[in-house]
Image 1 (tube, rainbow, N blue to C red):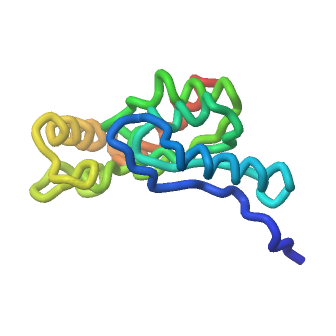
Image 2 (cartoon, one colour):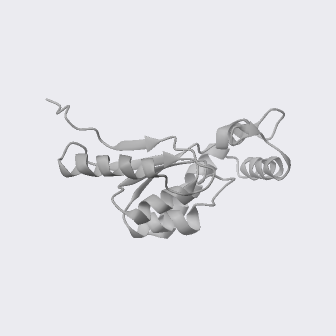
Length: 159
């Protein structure tokens, strides 16, 4: 019989800030989650957003078990790797890669109406997606295979 008294894990998702700065309400939410975890009501605490800077601040604050990182660990954007992903690896914090297709362009390719970060893709993003598509064609693979292999290679290098 399944125990329904646990939420596993509990992610706070959708925090939107112009600057990566923890807001007072996030501290209150964090404290409530820490209390639930201490009482054994939840087993893991996490947060999810499409920027790594605030997630890094939360990780450094402590108490987080996992993060959902949307769109910042993809073939087009690896900005989270040097600081955030390395920090999480060093502190045994799990990271869930969300939005691996950057809202569409990696799934549909560099074509008219393709999106990147939920806006029309432009300039260098389209060019980079085109080069990725060409490299995949040359290797006779799909971009999603390359995405998976790239992620696995990066994860192995962190071990």
